[in-house]
Length: 371
Image 1 (tube, rainbow, N blue to C red):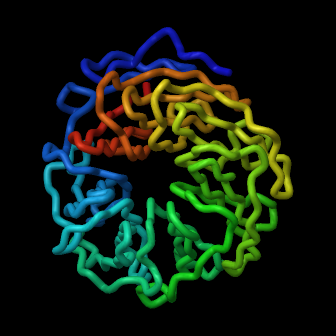
Image 2 (tube, one colour):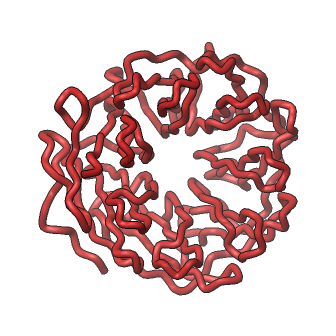
């Protein structure tokens, strides 16, 4: 079990981040972090993509959770500052995630909004960041807690898995003309799905998925036949209250591993054995409060995959030594509850920056210096 590092990375004021190597935090105005959404919504998640075609990453914000609130797209001016925002749609709703994908194959990023107890919405982009409602997906409208997109059928279109806390999660196959076919339930024992990720788990060349599940249920492995038909199996020794999941080669053996984050503040690493099999969990205590969200990327630029975790208190960087052994560095001593975290280069300096969705508090950006 890893123990917290002795140094701390304070968000206010900016100091230095040490995860394997030293990083500096900054932005072009001399500070390393800023709030970009001063009106505190119940933000459930964020996503990063170039919404207006100017070459930088903009921020899609899903607001509401269990209450009706507006969603937004925040536009980056190129240095990590979001100085313009536009509503995504005309209505308020209980949104849980926005997926920026090219639904209509016109080479710009559209938006798919996954909502609680309301149908999934599809917005088409005109290429300049103006989004118009195209329609909804038939058969959706369950107790959704998010979703993720990938090409499950091998046709070049982005499909979606919607994760439902109550009842079965659902597969949405892209129809290739700007929408999705009616939702198909993914049969599985139990329920409680709130997160997931995709990768080729069994080495057959197509993309599979993992669903993280809560309420004492086992998390699920979904092995794809290459046509969007999934064979579902429980991940051994994964019973618990796992909110989110990540798939990547965390231990450097060229086999995909699984990381699950839990409400008790722990991460569990299931090392891939090949062929869709996984070893027993190796647990790392990250926080003494629930982990609400996780994201992956090479934060310290040492060639392996690190993790950042949003929690109900201090957010943390989780540095990887390349063999799947983690070092914990707290970065945000605050009472903000971070429901969503995303990593992306927000200011064009070549390093991954951190964008945080804070439910009930302003959302924020932390810029990280690559030197």
